Image 1 (tube, helix red, strand yellow):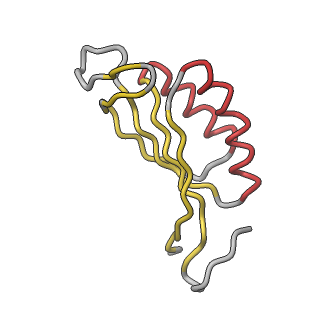
Image 2: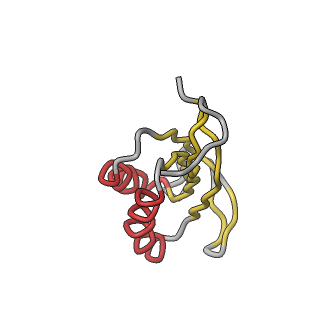
Length: 105
């Protein structure tokens, strides 16, 4: 478990994932398998990466989806990385991890 300096805050690893919308359901299934407590999805994102442009047009099959979630332990994060990395190597995308504080309520 990660340590936090305040009793009302829990240290977590925030995970930001950007993938093609075509693969969104597959990524969400991985999050369920890993057991993350929840996630937020922002659809129809656009940008440019090493695989070229992605658009935010609703008729565009290669628009992106941004997924934000948190991992509550290093073990959960490691499990997520092990499940996601092969997929990202095949399909492309972005996976960014930052340390954050989660206000428990």
